[in-house]
Picture 1 (tube, rainbow, N blue to C red):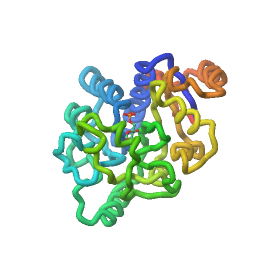
Picture 2: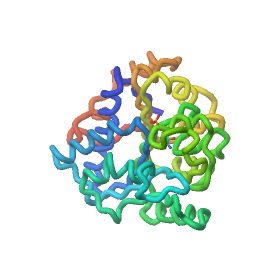
Picture 3: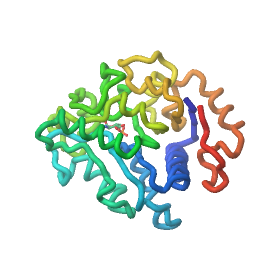
Picture 4: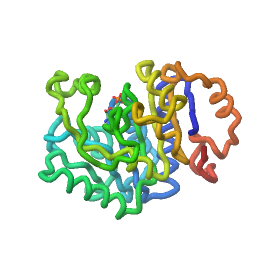
Length: 273
Ligand code: GLP
């Protein structure tokens, strides 16, 4: 895992957005796995700016979002589909037919989840999966105890996650308990994973995922097994990393062509970690 510590959240977001931009520059019909939550909002805002100012083109990009609440239609104001519409899809030139989302109103959820997996396979898999992390180490909605081999399926979120995600719903008791989420195994099949975390509330989860044991108790820890994964953090969320000094040193001494934030055209190849 490549661990990139940036001085603040704004720089962590810029690093992440530049990495996504480089992916689209390399492959205009990239398949992106996308995440919701407050953390990636600023990343999407930067991508929207790159689209508006520099013509970053989304017309051939295909997307698969990680998760959705069961019981919410795609037009529900608190659905993740609406979140993506507000922060990215409605602001760039992505084709609506290229957007894929778990359907929170699916009648046969098991069948729908199988179809979602099949749709990912049909386009050749996910090139780059953007991730956030929950305070308990969840990715997507794969809460602690999720099988590290799991596929897209129905899950029940924890009371803490309900509370963390309550803002739009006006109270934790109003947050749907059930969700559809890509599985940990599904996420691990993406060719590249990029996890962004900012703020001190994520410091414990970040340390556990990067330096703790690989365990279903912290589902994000399985990313230690991913052959190409970047963890991009600000100083606050890096606060509990034991080897932070080493990660900073590695990053500072990286060859210029390997840098995530390097100008896209100057980059010869992606970094491997
Ligand atoms: C939700 C999403 C996750 C996200 C997490 C953290 O649970 N399902 O994909 O990583 O929230 O969100 P935030 O960035 O708001 O802390």
